[in-house]
Length: 391
Ligand SMILES: Cc1ncc(COP(=O)(O)O)c(C=O)c1O
Image 1 (tube, rainbow, N blue to C red):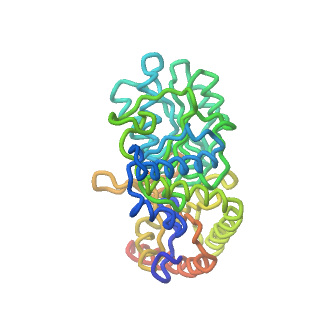
Image 2 (spheres, rainbow, N blue to C red):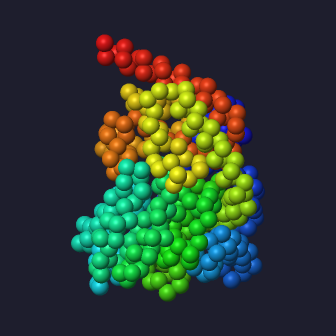
Image 3 (cartoon, rainbow, N blue to C red):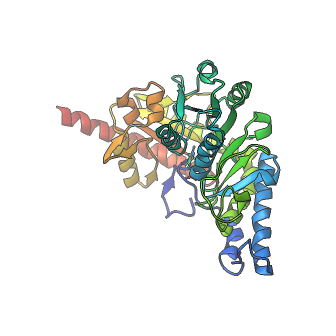
């Protein structure tokens, strides 16, 4: 890809994406001459205000919602926190429980743990071995005490697409609200909150070739949430603070661009992902693809390699200029296997042997060919080294 040094192959689009040059171009004036504060009444401020509102319209357009229902935040993490804590703290008098899935991102899991410490009840719905939420179990754990059900649309590690419409209906049947973290699906899959029945939707700019530090929360009209910060009147008092104008402009541009390219990119990227998947299965023995084969987003491939450590493989691929990720988390100095893979019932050994390849807008056919040329050799060498060590 152009933005990295020659021959560097970036296959980690679910972590973050390169800024599209068109997005950078749209942002630049707001980092220089149009520096006004959107809350100022003079012309410099109004130029910035206009840009922020235009970006809001672009994002609302993709979701097919009212621009006034979009609140800008600093990213997916803040949006998730705002949704989960904001609803529980607003409705907490009457309804004190939160339902989440076992495969949510830390941006939902950790606020949930924080709420639990404050005395709220957290119920966790399991997933099956393919990484899909168990809808029957979900039905059983939502009660009249549930304030919010939060289920992500697409899992960041496996790419598995969750049954959010069914979940929303189950939540509403019991008078609960429904939130979905759509950080990994926005701009890739069609997702209309009104069709799904989502009351709140989290988005992030940097997963769609937009800038880091910009995100949004869709809040359906009439849904009340408590603000987590106090300050000025920006973003309907829900998210006070002077807006990050250039990043918001970039987010709007990135959203419009992703929507424009969505259909053709889905076909192009899927072809490359499938080629990578089939190539790996053909040339390397002892591999398992993690996550439902059908209900999986087109850019993601999560594979466990028998008798290998994912971290070691990642580092050896890095030496070959191929950038991938593992779902492992570094906690208290030790590397923990992915909570998502463990929740699917995958053994700790295979979870530690997993690598995630995620493709995107600038991934080329040549990059996939180069990866398929290098990967089998790296895997073979590491496997030989580890069996040699055991002898
Ligand atoms: C599913 C999901 N939710 C939330 C986030 C957090 O988004 P951000 O990095 O914009 O805070 C991520 C990013 O990795 C994600 O993949």
